[in-house]
Length: 385
Image 1 (tube, rainbow, N blue to C red):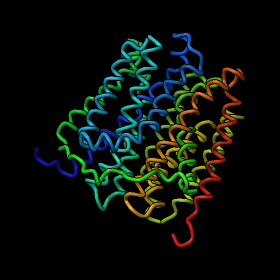
Image 2 (image 1 turned 120 degrees about the horizontal axis):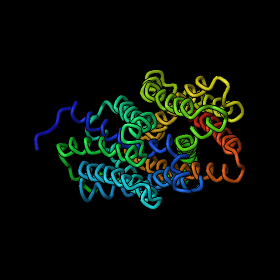
Image 3 (image 1 turned 45 degrees about the vertical axis):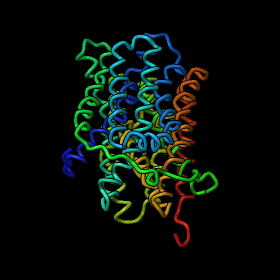
């Protein structure tokens, strides 16, 4: 097969990255409506967000083994097919079993594709990793924002049937598959696959994992419940969805700009602290005064959480000294981080059911954001590192 140009490879990476988030974030604008129509508790409906995140953690260590057996590029193609098929299942999403089952399948596809896309960057963009990771992060943010912003218009355009609006996101996944069919598949050799155990006994690996877990938990809890919190706080559903869209859209520039700034000025840990403190302030305002200057806090929250995600993706590159170490740190970060982070949407939903209000779970989220800031402070560079 004729090799693709660097531009075509970057386009394939971006299209794949874009499809790693809409299957999750597209549910947020519709989740209260879906829960009501299907008579589901908020704890149960939150599984549509929690299950993909849990799969993203549990299955991440399988990605290198699948790449060894089938080839990295072909495995990514199959993952995109799984995501497309799972989203198309939502055409029949008026069954709660199908809706939750499709969420698990989406998570499986994302779980394997995510780590392998990092390997794809390392293989095809040697010498440009920092900049390409910025594009990769931007692609995921575009997908997440698109799922949040465009799902309601798509639903309205498709007869106001939320199942059609959710299934709409199978189309970009199919488009990505078409391009990935042209990406040459390279079989892995055994010595290229991650070896050795994960760094469970390394204290800084736990700091990195803890930071990643909290930012992931905050993002997916907000992707599930932020609209509902705004609406409960007295804002109209239209304005609540607009604020959620703002939160997602602000992530577009910060997802690219912050990794670039961190590399340019070597101030990644200061930026991590700024992101954590910004998120703490904004979540506190949304908890206690959701109707006071909500646009301002939505903008700052989008900046803080998207920036912390983009920066956390490259933390293993700075913390570890060899490619093998980077792979081990990344696997631990994704495995433990997403498994822990997946609890946040469910616990927030259960907290709402028990307390009768979103105020209590959002107080807990605010505390977690403060803890994330403390971890960023603890991650300051080691002497001589």
